[in-house]
Amino acid sequence: MSLGPYASFIVTSYAAAALVVAILIGWIVLDYRSQTERLRELDRSGVTRRSGRSATDRP
Amino acid sequence: MSLIDLANPTRFLALTARVLPWLAAATVILLAIGLYQSANAPDDYQQGATVKIMFIHVPNAWLSMFVWGVMSIASLGTLVWRHPLADVAAKAAAPIGASFTFLALLTGSLWGRPMWGTYWEWDARLTSVLILFLMYLGLMALWRAVDDPSRAARAAAVLTLVGAINLPIIKFSVDWWNTLHQPASVMRMGGSSLDKSFLIPLLLMAIGFTLLFVTLHLAAMRNEILRRRVRSLQMMQASRIAFSSEAGTRGDNASNEVGAA
Image (cartoon, rainbow over all chains, first blue to last red; front, side):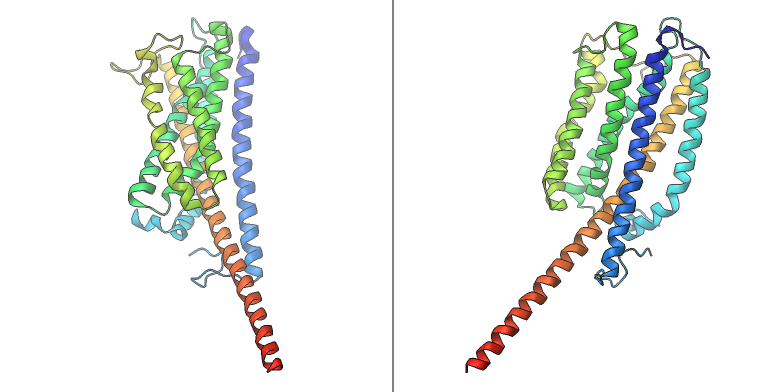
């Protein structure tokens, strides 16, 4: 596969797309870990939901 | 499980836990096939190899408008039906839509330099997409500026619906004004003008990026529900502490009064 004289533009486009998607995925994964950790901390300190279920519970 | 059942955030969390792994796998497979097809697509007779930039530019440009459309429907859900997940959906979509719009602008610019001889031109299509990007940023700032999610939701919903006016302007800007940007070549009356060797990788990448959006959006919605759960529990914890310290102060005062009597 030859990209010709404009290879740098093509490679930069694909690299930028990969980087932005990787940042989005990383942000969402880290945010999920952070929220579940905060819920576990609240659960450990005895704060529960009005339903009586643990904050990290799933049905 | 009916659509009404999904209004329950706990049920929604259970659904995303089941669906997300499958969606993520489908996204990876489709994007891998799309990238393979894009790499093997022939050079265009005018654009040469830079046509490969189109395989990521066009899906991102479509999604930049599609995501705002999703946010607009969610905003109607907030304002009209007060659906409990509507503003969660709108808030979670904004950073993802902003990212797709940024990529559409960046890759378009990187294609424009070798093809048009300039990275940027203040023509109607480019300018209206730049406005869309700025509106995404404004919306994200609005969500962060207001502490109470339900108050922020109503203001953001109004702004989103007003901003939706920009969508037909972006779509038809190439027809209404004399622009440097080329007119529609895929979704147009009379069918696509693209050759199959370009159309197939483009559609595969478009479906792959759309699945990527759905996956990221569901995951971001799940995070937002958990964030709100954390917020309400923290408020509950703070009110308990305030109540117990107030009760303690009252008890001290009462015993002092008894002692004085």
